[in-house]
Image (cartoon, rainbow over all chains, first blue to last red; front, top):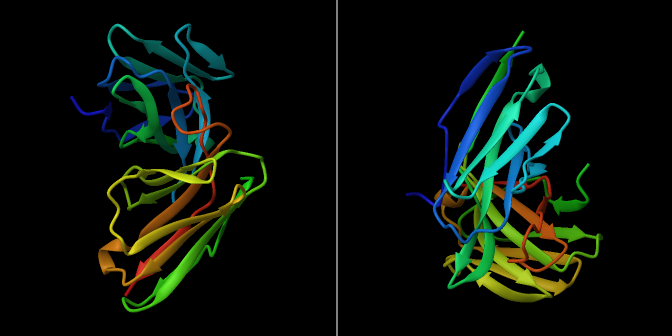
Length: 113
Length: 116
């Protein structure tokens, strides 16, 4: 299994749709999980952290399933401005110690009028 | 707007040139990072500085030379680059050192580098 693997995309959805992205990670000892958003030719920006209990921020909900080593991001009521690439980010583990963050390849979302 | 500032935003250089990329943050963050990102690929870690000391070098060729003059500044010195080094170079910082649980990265807007 790759260290961080995401849905390949692209996802093309109409405004108002609900869309879900999935991500799997290989190391069960990883402790840090995030979703970042990256617009074309811009830097990645933190969208939200992902916690075991799940967390919500407005139209965005992130969930973590440690048993399955699986992270998800749900976007409700999609807006045109949600069009971007969504990057799943997980930390590496070196010999039992938490290491630096690594990025999945990203899933591209296009929201159409 | 990002609080991590990178200069220049764009850079074109020849293979024999020497140039430097600069990064600055004033958030009091203790770790700073260089990432390289090619088009349609995720950012790839190059170097990490924690408390101004190089803590991670991801087997980056010696034509890339990082420098951390103080806790707010991070430079990347470039020499004898190849065309395949053309990419977006992103600087990032985090409040705690790399490896701290739930430590978030904050990115600068990047330097788009073209090597001719």
